[in-house]
Amino acid sequence: MTPKQQKVYEYIVSYTAKNGREPSTLIIAKHFNVSHQSIQQHIKSLFKKQYLRKREYIPQGEYEVVHR
Image 1 (cartoon, rainbow, N blue to C red):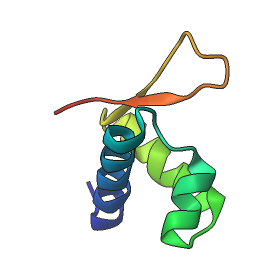
Image 2: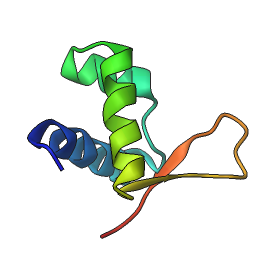
Image 3: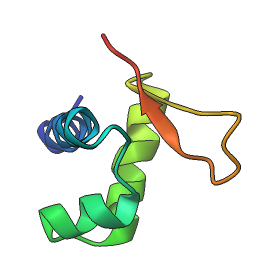
Image 4: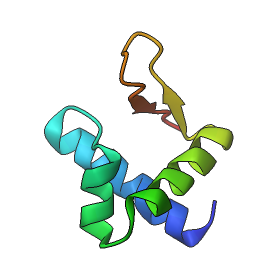
């Protein structure tokens, strides 16, 4: 995991613990003051590395944290 991916992952874990749900990519992008596309790339990498997984039963394709 790259340092930027680590920061995004840690933010997702923290946000989820505080709010009871995962943040949208727009919320994450706003937090880090980066583009939505940049966050989508980080999340895609986190899926590939199995730090996140898609929730199959949610039509919007939201994700959940995989506790490692």
